[in-house]
Length: 451
Image 1 (cartoon, rainbow, N blue to C red):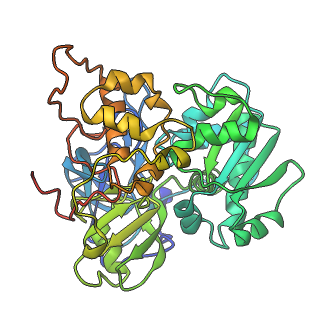
Image 2 (spheres, rainbow, N blue to C red):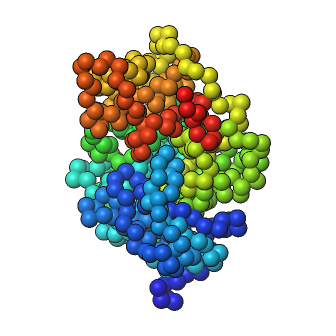
Image 3 (cartoon, rainbow, N blue to C red):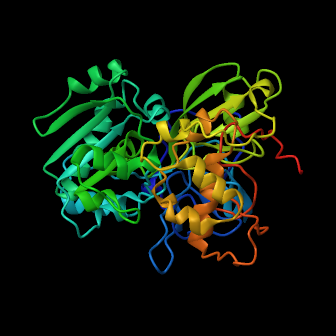
C-alpha cells in the first residue's frame, strides 16, 4: 500500500480492550475464501484478505483492523464448528485503505462496488450474487420485522442510509418499486420511515415477524406468488433485503467501505444493555466486556435471538457478518429438564407459519425416519423456532427438524431392517450432534453434558 492509498480515519467506535481479531474465511453460504495474506504481513483496515474460490462461490473478506497477521489456522466459529481463520493483531492505529466515494452511482458502478464489498444477507446469501439473477425483478422488499435487525441497525442516524441502500438495490436490480415491511406494533419505526418515503416506495405493516430464513414466505405474503422450497424470492420477481444489508450496501457504494463492522445488540445479564458497532472478528467475550461484563455467572450465550438463534459453547468465538444480537441468559433461565412425550396438543401446528406438522415431523426425525419427514414437507420449515417455544413437553422440535433436513440433504438412506437406526447428526455447518441450533435446550455455556 502506498501512502496515497492510506486513510487514517478511525472507525465509528474504537474499543480499547480489543487486542486481536479472528476473521473466519467462511461467513456465508458457499465455499470458504482463499486467503490473500500470509503470516507476518501487515494489513490495513478495509484491505481485502480473502477472496472467492475458482468457482465464484465465496464472498470477499476484509480486515476490520490495521495490524499484523499472526496466524492462519482453524479457530472456533459461532456456527458450532472450526473454520480456517485469519488472526490479526491490532496495532491500535485504525489505519485504513483509501475508500472511494461515489455520490451518484450508475447501475454498473453499484454492481462494481458490491462485487468485492463482501456483503451478505442475514440468511447467509451474498447480496451481489442475488443481483445477478436472470429473472425480472420488479420489487425490492425491505424487511423491518426482525427484532434483532431492527434494534441493532435502525437507529435514528441510520434510517436515511438504509433507505438509500434500498434505492441503490432498486437501481442495481432494475426494480421499479419498493415495499418496506414493518411490524404494526413498532410504531416508532413506521413513523420514522413514513416521513422519508418516495413515490415509488410503500410502507406495509404486518402482524408477523419475518426472520431471515423466512424470505420466501415474506415474498409470498407480499406478492401472492408461491415459491418452491428450492426457489428464492427472485422467482416472485422480488429481492428481500434486511436493514443490515441495506445499510451495508449504502456504505459500500456511497462511501466505499466494505462490510468490516456490524451493529449488534447486547442484552441479558450484562452490566449495560447496549447497541454497539463492532469490528468483525472481535470475540463475544470482548463485546460483553465493552458492555461492562457479565452480571454473575452466565448460563448460556445465544447468537441472534432465543427462538431460532445459536447457543455458543464459549464466548471466545468471533463476531461474523451475520451477527445482530448477543443474548446472555442466567443459569436459572436455562432449561435442563428432560423432554417429555408429545401430548398431541397441536400447539406447534397452530403457530407454524407454513402450515406443516412440526411435532409429527420431529417425532419421525427422532427415530431416524427422514423419508417420512420428507413426505410431510420438512423442507418447507422456515426454522422460526415457534414450535419449540410453545411445546408444553419441551421437545426439541426445531433441532430435530434441522437434523432431518441435513440428513436428506446429505442423502442418508435408512435401511428397511432398522426401524430405529443409530445415526448421529448435527447442525449443517459441522455435522456434529451438538444441539447448538435450538433455544431452550438446556445447554450450559461450556457445552452439553454427555448422557
